[in-house]
Length: 508
Image 1 (cartoon, helix red, strand yellow):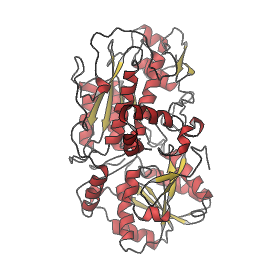
Image 2: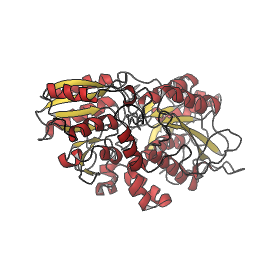
Image 3: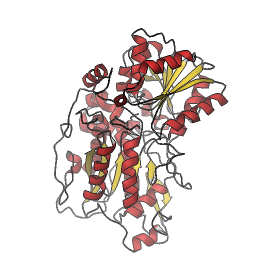
Image 4: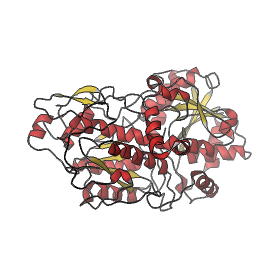
C-alpha cells in the first residue's frame, strides 16, 4: 500500500514517512535516481486540466471536479455504492446504510447532543451545494520547495475514483469536487495548505495523504474549525484530535510485525536493531516494538534515532551503532530514503552483515524497493503491508484482499491496464480515501451535514469497502485505531514485491 517527520522532508501516505530531498550530504545521487524512477516532476496538476468549480475559488482537478450547472437535486445514489443512500438524519436516529451495512446514525458528536437534533436545527452544510460536495486533499506535490511530486500516484488514484463516482451519478445527485493543495512536506507549507483548504476554500471534509507531521498540522486546524478530517497512520498513544484513521495505527503495525518475525525462520531469535525517525509521533513506537519483540523472545540490540535527510544525518554513525551492538536484523521505522542510505552504504562496502524486515512506513511500495536494490531483492527481504500487493492474483478474492480488485477495475476502466501496472501500487490508496468518505456521504444522502457525516463515520462497523482490512469505529472513542490485517511481502530481484501470504491475515 501507499504511503512523519519534520524539517522539510517528504512524509508518506497514511502518515507513513517517505522523505526525499535534493539537499544535504550524500543525498544527491538518491534524488537523481528517484527522479528517474518516478518519471514525473511537476508543480502543477500532474498533467490534469484545472477546472473552476462554480462560485468557489478552489483548485480542482480533471473530470472529477467538473460541475454540472443547474443539475437537478435528485436523490440518485452512486452507482457503485452498493446501496441506496438512506438518510442518516431520520428522527430519533434511524438506521442508515453504509457500504451495504446498517448503522445507527444518531450518536453524540463532538459538538452536538445527537445527530437527529443537529440536523433538525440545520446542521453545518459548509462545502455542500445542491450539486456539489467539496473535498479537500493535501499532499506533498513538492518537497522542501523542489518540484518532485512523489504523491502523483496517490493523487491520480483519488482523482480517478472520484471521477468514477461522478460518472455514475455522483452521490445523492451531487458530484464530488476535489480541492488538492500542496503541503510541501514541511510545516510552513502544511499550515498554508490548512488555511487554504479549511478557512479560504471551506471544504466540507479534508483528508491527508503522505506525512504524519503535515497531517497533525492540518488536522489541528480542521478540529478547531469543526471540519471532519481523515488520514492514515499515527500513534494511538499520541492521538491527533478529530482524526479518523484511514488504515492501521503505528501500534498495530509494530505489534503485527513482531508477531510475524517470531514465525519467520530467517528472523526468529536474531538480534534486532531498530532505526526510528526522530518525529514525536513515530519515535515512541520504537519502544512499543521493543517490548513486543522481547515478549516474543527477541533481543533488541539497539534503537538508533535517525534525523531527516535535510538535517545532515550521520548515516555512517548509524551503521557503526548497529555494528557495535552485533545487530542481525534492522527494522526501519522511518522513511525509505533514510533506510536506503544505510542499505547503499552497506552495498558499497561497509561491513554490515545484517538483513532487514519492515512494516509499511512506505517500504511496501515498489518505488521504495527500487531504492534498496540490489540488496533487498538478493536477500528476499520480507515484511508487512496493510493491503494486498496490487498485482497479486489473490486480489480477485474479496475475502482475502478486500476491495482491491474493485479498485483495479475502476482504475482500469478510466485509465487503462498499462496505467494500473505503472501506478497501481500507489494509486490504490486513493480508493481507500474516496471510499471512506463515500460511505458516510451515502449514509447521509441529501440531508448532508458535517454532523451527519461525522456520526456516520463514528458508526462504521466492520466497514469493508476498502483496500485494507475492515475498519470499525462504532462503540469506541478511539478513532486512531483502524485496520488490523496485514499481508506478507517478499522483495524480488526485479525490484517488485511478491505477496507470499494468502491475502490479508488477522495475525501471525
